[in-house]
Length: 437
Length: 173
Image 1 (tube, rainbow over the protein chains, first blue to last red):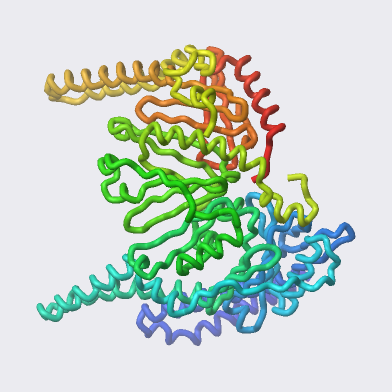
Image 2: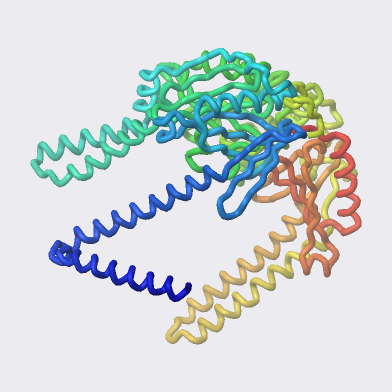
C-alpha cells in the first residue's frame, strides 16, 4: 500500500518535471517578468489557502442559546474553542458588513462582552437578515425578555451630510498645509522649468488626498440613532460599521475643535468608554472612541446630552490659568481653564486645536496635583483627574498653584458626592437585572 | 467646598500637623543608597579601568571626569535622602493622600471606593532592611499612588485597612 503511494508520488513528480520542461521558454523572458510571475503565483496560492481556511472556519462555527439562556459559540478549525457568553454580561451587539461581505449581502455579528481583553465575539459570516435576527434575539434575551420580543424602535437623532464630512476633512491644517506646499512646488517647478520637484509634489499632494478619501469612505453616511441599549452609530461607504455606545460606560467626553473648523462652529467628539480601546492604539481603536466625526457644536452637545444628561458645559464656573502661565505655555495659555458645577468637571486646553474635556464627577478614579520645576518657579501647578484609559485626558494645565490644590480638593469631595448620588452607573445593569458588579 | 479640617489636611506635609501626615521609614534611605552603590561602584570602576588602559589621556581630562563623577555621586546620595523625606501619606475619612517628589512634586488623592487592588512589594535589599512598599491601583492607569519604605507591620496594617475601607465604599466604574 505504502509502496504504491510512493510509486504514484514518484510518477506524479516525474510528470510534473515533464510539464516543467515545457516551461523552458520562460528562461528566455527577462528575469524581472519571471520574478513577478513567481510572486503572483505564490500570492495566488496563499490566497487560495487563506480562502480555504476561511471556508473551514466558517463551516466550523456554530452557535446556539443553551438551556441556561447563555449564548454558546463553538469555533476553530485546528483548535476547537467552545465559548459561553452570559447574556446578562453583554454590552452591545452590532452588525457590521465588510466590503466583500456587503457585495453578497452578508454580515458579521459582533458581540461585546464586559471584560478587559478578548472580550469581543465575532460571528462571521451570516446573511444580513439572519444577522439582524440574531442581534434582535440576543438583545431581547439579554434584556431578560423572551426571545421573540420585537426590537425596540430606534430613532435617528443626527446624521453627518457628505458635504460637511468632506469639508471637515479638507479643512485640516495638515491637509491644507500639504496641498499648499504642493501648489508652491508646482509653481516653482513651472517657473524654473526644473521638473524634478514634481515627484515630491506627487507625494505631498497624493498623501493628503489618500487620507481624505479613505476617511471619507470610512465615515460616509455617519448616523447616530437612539435605541434602548444606547446610542447606535452607523457609518461607511464600502464597509458598513455599526457600533453601540452604552451610556453607563461612558467616562469622559472630548470636544475637539481644529483651527480651521472654528469659523464654521464644528467639532469632533471623542469619548472614553470603560474597557473599550484599551488594547492597542490602532486605527480601529481611533474609530471605536469616536462619537461624531464632525458636527455643529450645538448638535454635538445635544448628542452628548443623550448619553450624559447631567453633563452641561455651558453653565460651568471657570477658573483660568493666570497671566504668568505664558512663561510655561506661550501658545495655549489663553485657553487653559478648569470648570465645574454640581455634576460636571471640565477642562479647556489647546490654542490651535481646542479641546474641551468633560466628565461627570462620579467617573473620577483619582485626583492628582503635580508641579514640575519650572512650574514651581512661577508658582503654577497642574491638576489631573484620572479616568479609565482612553483618548480623553482631563488635565487642568498650569493653574495657580494654590488654586489647583483647592480645585483638586473640591474635585475629590465632588467625586465622592457624585458616586453616592450617581444613578446612571446602573443603567444597563439594573435594566438587565444584574447587580453583582 | 469642604470644611476647614480637610482644607488643613490638604496642605503640603511640611506645613500640616505631624499627626495627619505619616512619613516613611528612614530605612528606605539606606536601602536606596545601597542600590545606588551597587550601580555606582562598577560604573566608576569601569570608567577608571578605561582611563588607565587608554593611552595618552591628558591629566586634566582624568581630573575633570573624576570631579564630575564625585559630584554626581554626592548629588545622587543627597537626593535620595531628600526624596525619601518627601514621601508622606495621610488617611482621610474617604480617601488616601500620597505626597512625594522634590523636583517634580505631586499629590495623589485616591478615594477608597475606587481602589481596585493594593500591592505590597519588597525586593531582596528591602527585605533585608525591613522596608516594604504599598501601591494602590484604580481603574485609571495614570493613578500613581505608591508609598515606598514602610515597616512591614505598618504596611500590612495599611493594606488591611485600605482593603476594608475599599470594600465598604466600593463603587462600579
